[in-house]
Length: 293
Image (cartoon, rainbow, N blue to C red; front, side, top):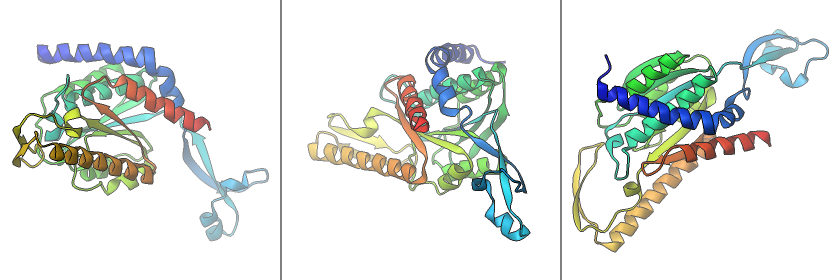
């Protein structure tokens, strides 16, 4: 049985996500993801008229006769939602917590997928993989995913994206559309990003809050690092400190975005102050425009 308050929250999120998915994003979703990929099918001997660009030179060298790779268009998309539920996701100084915005985005993506008869799966992680739900189709399955995302989580200290992606690589054999949703509060860029981006179509979504980017002038404040538990006291009335803090955060985000670009990973940002609809629409539109060139 689903608790009454959780049931109401799921229904509210379903209505909101369905509106965004059905009225604003369906066309963009289809353009950005449907029919864009080709999946390897087989290798066979070359015959007259085949495209020479499809020749597999490694197999050709071994067999001493030209062989080509055969691809078939991907008719069905598998969407994987990889969601960070580490302790830092509990933070939010605006209308929502980061975890709530994450749930909103996940719900929109799930309803977009099910509307187009695609499979959706879920992987929840913090310092280890907490739960995995295999990809399936249907509205009932999406409800199960949303219930899992919204259910009270044991927010754990530490974020290990590598463990999540390594687990994903072990259990998914076919190419999938993967949304990695996290605030990326980690000590170093995950090593598994490159390998995951080669096997799957990986999109990184950074969840931010305004107070993580700049501090208000409020005098002496105690700050708790939700990932490590460390407590420090800072003087937010110190203009030099606030400027240095903002500059450090800008540099961190710039390095992260540069790392994504270097690996060829699409990425965009959502924040706690506004709905996920606008940044998602802008991302899908940009992706569609780029693919048409």
